[in-house]
Length: 143
Image (cartoon, rainbow, N blue to C red; front, top):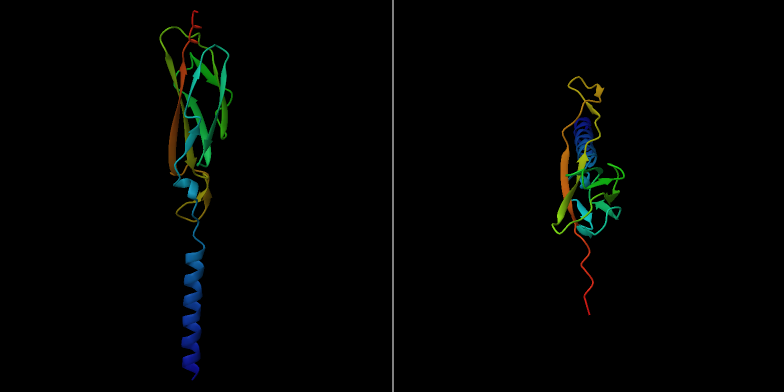
């Protein structure tokens, strides 16, 4: 009878440990999510014009522009930035590519000995692009 109680207690212990181990996993949906920029495209007609771009579906955001000679961002982190044109459009359109990267990594993890380290981790990286076209305003129709 004593052996049955020990066996039963052992089974309960193993079951409880299994439930606890399976239930404590950490899943972050943003690590697998696709990120988007809204608006995904815009047309600017004058130097000094701006457009607000918003990223969603990620975790941490890092923004950049392809060509700093035609426009700049007010910040390079966060889910929202303002792109401002410094380009004087001509008859030939100039297209600026604005890219946002979303990285999931907390930069803290345990090393082989169990000590916490701040060494960079490899995490999920996703990106999206928006296209800003610099083009002069169409001429008013002649009546």
